[in-house]
Length: 469
Ligand SMILES: [Zn+2]
Image (tube, rainbow, N blue to C red; front, side, top):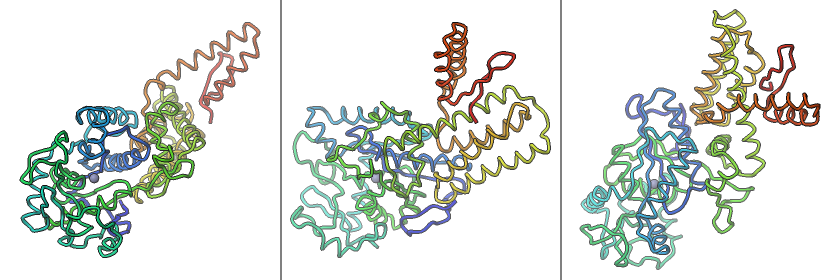
């Protein structure tokens, strides 16, 4: 499997540290607000990467943190006159609800909160001080960037350029404008703060991620991931402090997803196009949002528009209809050995699975992988009927569902079970309408069923229905 490594700017064959095991750290949200679609993209993309590793038989150690102490949180708590815990608890709870609706694979996910790792954070800073790579100025501790080897290696930035471009006078206490805070002194009495060798204060954001990753996954991790906006300074600073402390490579692969545009404009708070998942949820099932986020390769920008969302919704319905049709065929078809023709069909089905895997192996090309799923459904709709053996229908169904599990879709339960009932009821209504000679109503119901992708056939045994091919 090849992954594009931001560190080398190349697609590289993925080689895990431990065989058939992978550790992934994804920078999670700062929990002072609801999740917007921009936050959701890395979550969906790297959740899908994790699912693909599981599909390939890997043990996956997946860490997605909550930044639960930060200026933004402290400010919000002050604004609302609340304890900061009330803010973070509320938005962590909301995150978990969105996570469920986005079908994130939570069974095995570790969600560390920064505030649970204050002691190892203090130890980490002490370690850097011992190495002469950190300095304390009146309770604020800074990382000395001149002590880092190859600073700028991830974002390809040059320290001298950064120094020249830095705004002067923002913080006179730093030895160099590129140095960054490891530990921040409490400014006011009411601010949340922890005891430390440098007085009461709290950790800096970059330190939080380095320490959580190291504490849970070890000094060198397989994959560190996040949005491309985190490359600099966040990830660059994580590398600088971690590698200066341990003298080891911090992460072997750095993965970054591209941005989201909304009606072809950059998302920004000032433009008011910062869509929250809970707002979108009023119009679209979050499964549609997930499917949309995977419809474009993760390193390309993706655009949100109503039109695109409608197309995505219809595409997802086509897959659901294909799934439903195979389920019905499985119930009707008889078990028997594969015919020669079915052996060919079986090979074709394997071909679609291979295409899916090939796309995913090529730097997680979910767009092409999804195309393979559409082709499988289209092929099944045309080639398979209840006259086929149950075995071959089952094979098509199991293949579709294996791939759907990787993409994280087609797991809607309630409606699935209700589709039969819903269709049967509409058919009954139509029969009644015809009996009452209300042909206009009967036609209207037929059209409604057609819109759902259901075709009716009048036979001698009554009306039968099937999913439109
Ligand atoms: Zn982070």
